[in-house]
Length: 330
Image (cartoon, rainbow, N blue to C red; front, side, top):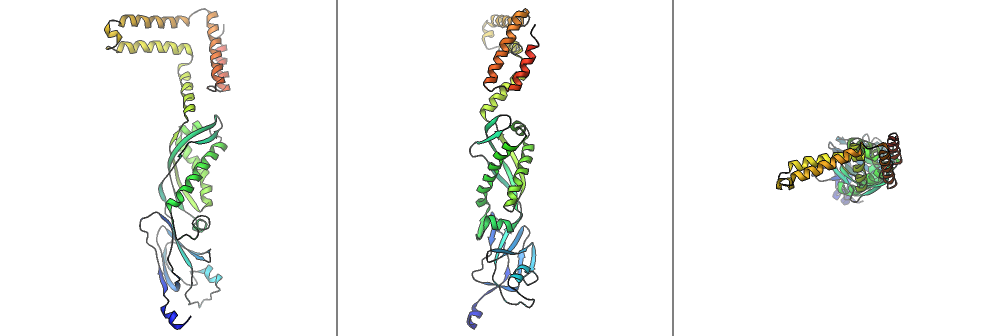
């Protein structure tokens, strides 16, 4: 290099980066074939880390503060280049700024229903969505596995990869978990905590720290919801006879309150009598002889067996109900 080339060459003596409010995660400081002046100043603001990259390998790391670039602050580069304590020459190195503050209010969700394996109900489909937050916890690892030599890397570019990680891990989590899906659906706080625990190791593999993970909605598959509705009704009414009596009594109260209906047109008495007869007939069935009651019990067991065959009742639920009914036989 001639004397005039040396005079024309510019050296960098101040390195700093001010974020402009965008969603940048990684920013490469522009060098343009310039060299860094030994003794130059490096500014790293709160929520940032600076990495010096030498020939594609991570060298020295700088935390927030004002740093003077010399052999004391560049121990790895000093070792690599065999600099002695009298080093005064400019040097080349790539400098990357990493944003390490929390990336809050990130969204995740199932675009399409995902199929999971549940310990109680086998393969079921569900939809879910919620929020999470994360941050770059290990810039060296994030550089090697994610951002690489990119000049600029944003939250949006990472978004798709994180969503894929969450949905894949959710499916695997339900396949291995001993906690039934219904328990998770009933307690979304517990589900959020368990999912966060399951996701944290995968995030760490990419140099990320998962700060929060929240499930805001978990939609049950339609067929499972129908089953739960039927099971809930059976538990509320106890048996079919009580359910019939309940329906008859409820209809009388509804008709009496409906002044603008048929009862208000002179038919109320007949309708009331008919309902009363229906209720009396239902009640009398409950007090018939033991033979007819036994037949009803056996018929009920047959209906329950049919529900079990259709998958509405489990084997255990059927056996429990059957034992209760068999004890009533005379």
